[in-house]
Amino acid sequence: AESLSFLVDGMAVVVVTIPLPNATITALNTKCRELGSSFIYAYGAGAFGKVFCDFGDNFVVSDKDGENPATSQVETILPTNPAAVKVLEDQGRHGLETGDKVTFSKVKGLDKILSTDPTAQYEVKVTGPFT
Image 1: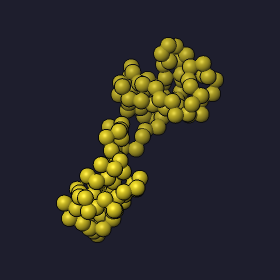
Image 2: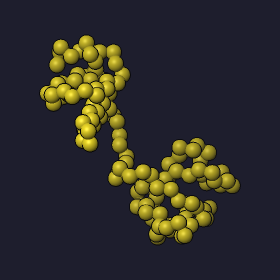
Image 3: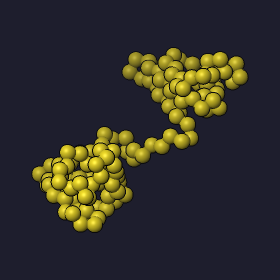
Image 4: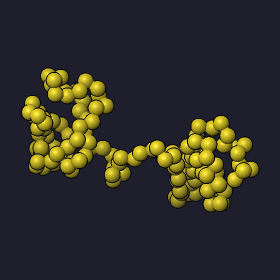
């Protein structure tokens, strides 16, 4: 692994897209971790391929299922504490679970309840398929 230092030293992200033996990939990733660099390995061979990403110990993945985030149109927000939110029933159930986090966009008139920060997240407590 020491001989790989010249490939990794000073790099924030190392990306490899050529076929390499697993031992070499592992050694590169180990060296990246030692130096605080991110490591991405992606290799495609026809219809098949493999991808490995290591962004270090402090990288947090909060995606529970790999699916794209769901969106729902809000019908009503009751200004209670905590606020109660109902989505439009004709767009289907919201599919959320207690503990999930949501964000709101394009909401007007609830400045005292919702943060003005568009990235603010709110923890969900499900009370029904539409609330």
